[in-house]
Image (cartoon, rainbow, N blue to C red):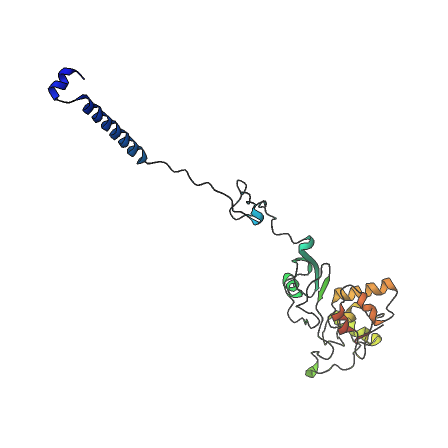
Length: 258
């Protein structure tokens, strides 16, 4: 500082140095306070996949995958709809249902599910020989449509049927009329459908159809077995016919003979 300025202001040099240091400290403090009070941008949080079992993170879904689709599964029209292989059963529903045919059902389905898939049982058809709660087996055949057993005919008085007439158009075992019933009545005398057990080696499809739990399809299977094996040697051979299980055999064993 010039001598003339020190003499004029009456300020010594050490006082000027001290004042300068104070100003420098104040400037540094003000700059630090301003910098710390400045608004800073916060980075967005990083998305981390949820950890699965074993501590491994689940992979993120591929681009274009709809929300809710499990990882590793590509959506498609056939996803989750196939019941083939070990995931379902295939059964043949025949007889007196609205829509007979082969049906593919989920595993664990029961007879009632197969009947529902075939459109339901026709009106007036008795299902006494069917266990609707039974689990279905893959490849089995389910035959529906056993007519009313003998003695529940619609003849006069509604009682037990009388002797089997030999004229066409009259059924001897069920009271039904028509061409099919007439053919049943015409041959009833030779097989004993009206007075005794049905002969497995001589009965026709129409006669076997009158048995409880036996429809046209199962009757045809019985005749096919008879043709292939040269006839029935005992009633127990009915167990080997396709479509006859233990329950149905128990219903038929006292109504038939070899």
